Image (cartoon, rainbow, N blue to C red):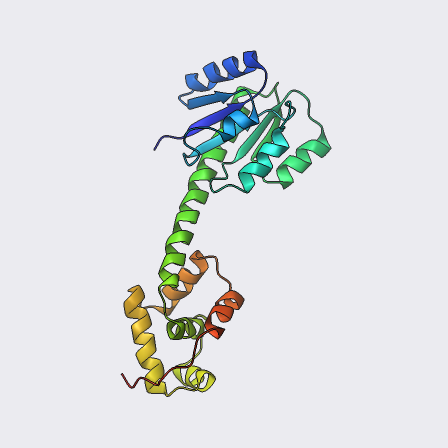
Length: 220
């Protein structure tokens, strides 16, 4: 899937100029004369980055930045504005902008920022995919398997887990085996990494495991 630089500005001459310049550097470019036009684009899930003006009618660059942050595809933002000051640039960067320039920016600096932004998008996109896959895997675990996973992540021994959950060590071993077979993950470090990829803290995992209903002790 190709990466696209989305250029948003209410100045048509700037849009045309920037489109020619970026296409000349090999980029796929899409232009929009308003934030609303950009948000209504046909494929909001496509990779790339956003190059936007700050001051525009109705919705400005900060409105766009906020809308992207709340979306399922938060593309990185590079600001290129006619008027900029230090407080404004600080606000933009704190909100996650990749960079902030005036329209007198050197082409080399702009291209470098776009490269950083598109690479960042690919990294974050891969991270979101890993998180979704990990969460799906964890959603398939039984209550008891969640308890086993919590114990493993916390580095507990079978004896400790048996005492905590009122089980025999043999039953703990059985449920641990069921857990690893279901996930097809057998090393403790890889199980811990799965939880990390899911973006779930130990406290959240503990809350999930606490909902487990006590069941019969399976002898295995």
